Image 1 (cartoon, chains in turn blue, red):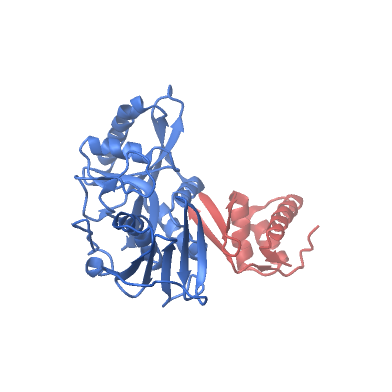
Image 2 (tube, rainbow over the protein chains, first blue to last red; image 1 turned 135 degrees about the vertical axis):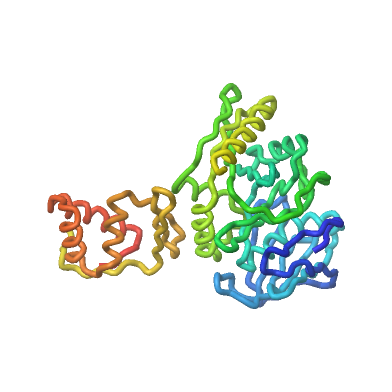
Length: 289
Length: 90
């Protein structure tokens, strides 16, 4: 799929999404026969997902509509590599790009039940993806931006799309934008240094805010705590996909390592945090050699 | 006080998963997770093999040589917890 003149390489997945297309059409609108799932607190927009089939784990061959009221509606069938859209009265090209990249395309992939999405920041370090997990306003974008300033490639500033293949887990590169600031319905600044290849997932860092006077500290997270953090770091954790998602996370828990990274809540500490992560990654590499 | 000569059925919606040293019990019906301690893990695994509490008691007693009173007490608590969460019918 080509967005912003950047190809997203899906060759390692089972879908041939290289041929994915976006089509403008007219009058996408759900009728009374659609089932509806409403979303709350989404950047002050009324948002809903509609389906011709009941939302259930085994629902197949449904037609979906995702509506951002008065802005844009998208529709698709899961078997097609195509999403159609209609702009409404407040719809613009900028908002179209934002909602498609930020929300609709990840939902499209999730509903295919082959991909799992995390709400994280991620960058590259020496052929290894570094994934930063935290609640909203937990420092993911700030830390991601710091790494970009240090010359590391961006994988994602917001959503990490993952999948399982041959017993391992992989991450797809996302859209090449990052947001070192908060602005509604904005993808942020274009990232010039962007990773375009699929990466094998190995570690994740869970950011934990600590007092500014404390030191940066890293400890491995295991067991149920690991599972809980992955679950809370998940994006669009649909209830009707609960069992599928749980099984996915259980398998992921067996493969990747998660580390709690205590981050002194002070922008001046970012350098220390950065160096600690690099040091940690170097020591992990030495252990495996 | 539980009656050992009682048949039971565990909810079909239950799944367990070991993650590192911990074991999670998931009820897919309620979408709730529970952490099982080491005794509960063993007891639950044995309960999955049988349908009568006497058989569970016998296997636990022979495998672990736990004092009878202690074993009965532990079983009661565990089964009571399962009943509270509608994970078992007796």
